Amino acid sequence: MLRGRTALVVGGAGGIGRAIAAAYAEQGASVVVADRSVVDPAELGLAGAVAVDVTDEGSVAAAVREATQLAGPVDILVNSAGILTESPLATMSLSTWSETLAVDLTGVFLCCRAVLPGMLERGWGRIINIASQLGIKGGRGLAHYAAAKAGVIGLTKSLALEVSARGVLVNAIAPGPIDTPMVAGITEDWKTAKRAELPLGRFGRPEEVAPTAVLLASDPGGNLYVGQTLGPNSGDVMP
Image (cartoon, rainbow, N blue to C red; front, side):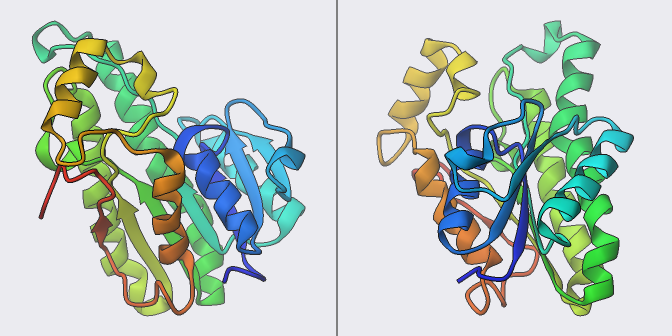
């Protein structure tokens, strides 16, 4: 389904990004993972792995260059890098707010901007941004995270309007709570309360999100998705 395509999965060393990278490789894509910690590409059958700091413009540009050298021009970009902390807004430090926005939103902007010239020149590309259902509904103690993810959804729609007519399709995935190392840092009280809210009564698994990313990257399966936010979220948000 993705044979002949090159995919760059940013934040692909663990969690949802890792599951997406593995799924893309299984579908025949040449996959490069970019993350703060470099993984062994052989573990997932990848074409390569590079280090990146998504908050640093130069680091992002270098990672895209390295990925292109390893596997060819980037056809598919997945922005899955993120951090998650918990803090009431009234006592939240500016550094906590700024760090979350830098990683979860500015990093998406920098990575999109880095791959766009090549995609537009070739007239084909897929960009898939990992948002969150909290960007739609908000979350107690998670105003900084929800704000960043709402920004990702807005960025996705705006960029889709700019580039879809030139062959680059931009969409978002807004998962509900997923059992990943990132969510492990949230308090057990929060997680217990959240599970009780979900119609499915459980958090998802990364491998249950990855097929949505495969769909959006595929041709013809993803050809009509433009500026959409798909929600594998255990029923937490029903648009």
